[in-house]
Length: 215
Figure 1 (cartoon, rainbow, N blue to C red):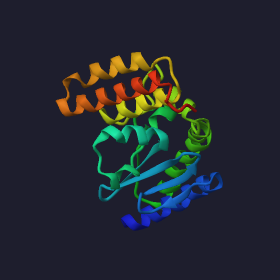
Figure 2 (cartoon, rainbow, N blue to C red; figure 1 turned 90 degrees about the vertical axis):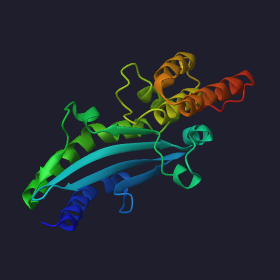
Figure 3 (cartoon, one colour; figure 1 turned 30 degrees about the vertical axis):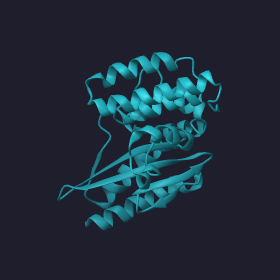
Figure 4 (tube, rainbow, N blue to C red; figure 1 turned 45 degrees about the horizontal axis):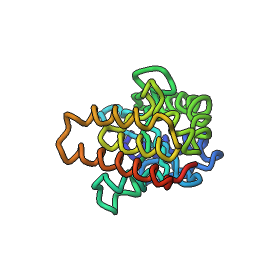
């Protein structure tokens, strides 16, 4: 099978599971995407040619626009890329409890088996969480849970979104999260430490002025 054939087959199979839940295929992003109030949710499809087989995996992206607006005040990311950022990136292993969640496929039978397994995870575990996380407060609870196993995005950007989520959700844990974030970036270059410090001070100033929008 060729890569294009594998991709077409996987897209077709997963479309059956995701289309009824308002997800639409965006081939440019290699993802099924749906809009939600103040954001979007994405199911990213990765297909790697390992000749003679292909490795197929799924990653979940969640974006809350108000969070990204705050984070990008300090991220330094070019404006043209800011609309592509995700507030949280979640591995399929979070939902399956298994460390290995990639599938090797080399035939139509393999693809049908792999996509059936993924569709089951989507129905049973992923979609209920995505429904729950349509609000910033619910997403904040997942991202800033004590286990810290939901969002696998890397710092320092993950720290910016974590803190922005806590601020917008009016979380009492903001100061403890800020202390933790400062410790995490202590080993990073000064420019990265400054981004986190500036966001923290921004939120503190807004709180003093009672000017942080909440959800």
